[in-house]
Image (cartoon, rainbow, N blue to C red):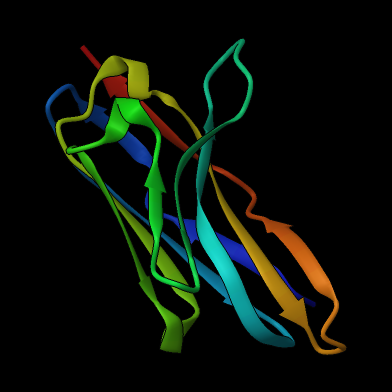
Length: 120
């Protein structure tokens, strides 16, 4: 079974930091892109950061300079280092990946979500 497993959410005070981790498992031949989305209460899911196989990373404007996405291709993992967290960052964070499965079929994967709560 191909899946993404996340960890690292929690409660933090404004100005604090958290690190999210995501690992892909199962029959995966390659990972095209890997990153994070988030969904705040009453809002649509939005891209936070994503990196493709060329190493190009895209960040949403509101997190630039505060969040850093990194990948470990050997571990099939992605990490989101979040600094200077603000209450507006409160959301469920979802790991996302586009991968080629065992038959070179293209799959879009989502993690189960991890809650990040930033208190003021």
